[in-house]
Length: 236
Image 1 (cartoon, one colour):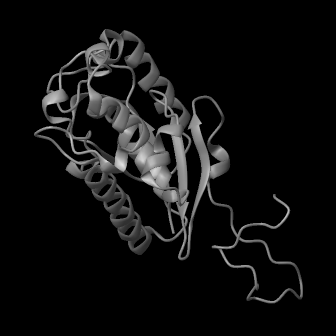
Image 2 (cartoon, rainbow, N blue to C red; image 1 turned 30 degrees about the horizontal axis):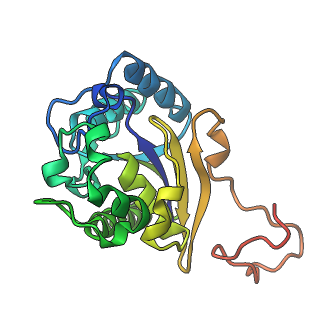
């Protein structure tokens, strides 16, 4: 199956002001965030991307647009399933204030049991985000083949939830995962399991992700017993 490069949006004005932005419209990248978006766009410029899909929120759109400038033949698509968690009444509140709410400890330790007041459950957020990634992945495999590379731009909690699913972890463990602004997290989905190729990567080269033609030595059987879903025993 194809490989998805999950990109968290660049730093926003809400990140620096200590506010839980949620789905608040008009939350844009700050000056550092614009620079971060340009930097991750440069890193991705070398890749033959098959698609760029983004959350419809402004901070993600700005990040995705920076990436799309290097891939002018691609249509930038939005998918509401990649949007931020619906924090309900928590939206727009100071993090310092929310940390005093009894629900805060549940969010930290038992997120699978959380439904935000007048908002979304964290289980629901994970489910619709994972469904979005797998749906796009399957569609791109059908159109471009299993070697396709594509980008999904989303939010910290959403990407952490997708990674937890790919690692086979319970949602209650997802707070152990760190996803920085403008970082890349790379997952390859195969028929029987996903592989988390990179996590919270903000600086390494990405050209090695470009699929290489399969090598076959003389006399080697056309069908290898090692399948694409198999892990390499002993490491690569």
